[in-house]
Image (tube, rainbow, N blue to C red; front, side, top):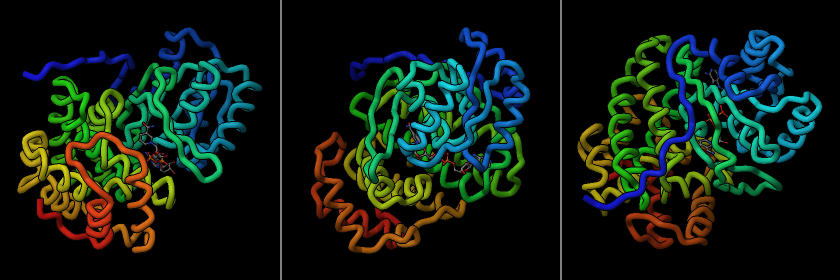
Length: 352
Ligand code: NAD
């Protein structure tokens, strides 16, 4: 057996149906008497309802969270946070809302209670990506990691079908890269192995009935496992390429992950088939082809071209992707990355 370091898990997790009722008790358990509730505009009604339910604990709602955590939004939110005399935030939503809560926490020391409503997986991590002047920068810091995460499956029943599929593939991408992470450990690997069948079996059931609570629970459970992987081991080529496309070309986060995943898994799977054997066991054939077949069957987008990218954009993306070296199980150069992007742009089924 390879030697390993297991860093321990520090975030308290509550999982189930109707768990939203526990937010107030969790806020008090952390020692706070005033919290600011955060959401996107689209989820403002849910945030207002939660604020009303929290009663005197709530200092109000800030409902302007936006994709890629723009610093201008964070500045406005910080002013609202300070004016409200809150000492903690409750983030209700997907990765965009969680990102805003993290941005407030790292600047003020506020505690965070996160209630995830997508499968993107920001809630268990110490990672924050922020955008300023069109540039997205990412950092890791223990002060970014939320104190409490409350998964309430009832809140995911309204996740639109298209986002359900792409967000789930976004989560699977965390597991795929955790299998070959340089700092992988057997606990996270076991969690990722457990996650894959939850998505494989749950997503087709959700496609038939988006309000199937049991299927939604399975997929949310998988998302928690994958978020934990993202939060405790390092990612590689796949996350790098998704970051380049999202950061420099403003492609939608979940779609970008969903389209790239079969290609990055196929590329790395050719070098480390043993490490990616759980992916082949779950989805069949080979890591890339198996994931492509699954993505195709559940109606995921398959072509970068459909996100509005041009072939000239792929040239620039390949240049940016090789600017700074980073760990990956398979060595690569610019031409390998350019070829991978071309396949993803055309939506070809990977051979490996
Ligand atoms: P999102 O948070 O932007 O949500 C997408 C849209 O779906 C929003 O309008 C939101 O209000 C809506 N929505 C969310 N849940 C819903 C539900 N249950 N019902 C109805 N509508 C719902 O998208 P996302 O994919 O969750 O997050 C993407 C962002 O998160 C990106 O900025 C990405 O960089 C970041 N992210 C960060 C990390 C990290 O560890 N730092 C990890 C993953 C993602």
